[in-house]
Image (cartoon, rainbow, N blue to C red; front, side, top):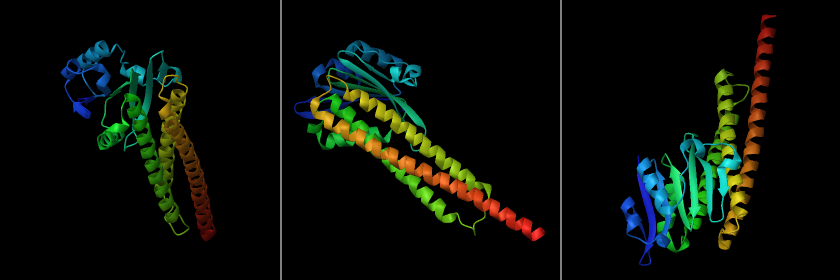
Length: 259
């Protein structure tokens, strides 16, 4: 669903508008966040002209080379990052930060964005600029990544409990292990992506100093998630070896019966 949301301060309150015409009625310095979800090219063009920015094409946003995923100029940041959806599909998002205004470009609904909006309206004083919004988006995304790792870990635990010598050792178990390995790999790839973006932001000389501690915490949390994914990989390798060992044992027992 196509949607434009403009977040801005007015008379000490944070307001939201879904009309591009709002830009002509408010002061530029009062805008903190412009979120675009699958909007038309006409709206993108109008925003580019109004904010004097360049909004990348989909192909550029999806570019995997790090040199293309993070670009910094004297007064702006362009950062492209993948946000995981519940079905483990990666949704590319482009962030443009200039003059304290965050512009986000995406083509799908994302829980982390909706959750950040809730946080903004619960405590608007914590979001004076687009820089603060961007940090909150990454904090929320990493929290969801942790939830996804926890869910996969629970699935691995349940599979481990079901895998014993009394089980029917069919191919479905091996397929479940492969599926879980793929999920862990996708999560790990996703958090590596976040780590690189946040690490580059930490090097930015105009990013607000009060947000640096929160960025450092994000990096620390991401490093913790790496440990969990490594643990899950090890458990899955063990389960795979156990399954193959049990299959060999079962086959040997069958051979003994017939001999």
